Length: 168
Image 1 (tube, rainbow, N blue to C red):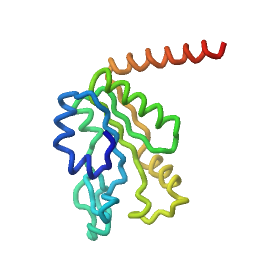
Image 2: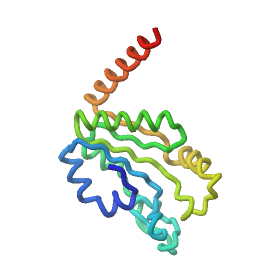
Image 3: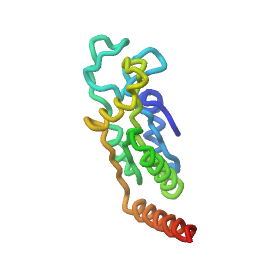
């Protein structure tokens, strides 16, 4: 499932929590631009406290929801937070999330994505925004259950061996 922060954290929250706590076998990828970018700039559950937006001119009152904390509370086998500053890491994270979900149950990846229109970030500066966000508050995190870590380590070891054999 791939969803924006508003669709996942606000609109789809109830269903998401039920599926996580039942450990349904699917991956959730939240594209977190921290605002409802498609509907005029209203705050979402992921908007930072105090942020002034078009539809919250006095600033958001409540704190940002802790989706990583909720995923940990649901005991998901794999949880990650990424920014698209390292394409190889993004691919590796998505692969791990999907493989672990197929084997064990729900996984969660929270990915920061700039909302350059609502935050008036010029298109050439979007990647710099991502680097800045990563440095300040959205650093890479990755959490595995013991069984998921053993599973991924085994798969990645086999992948390396196969790649090495293919070079011969």
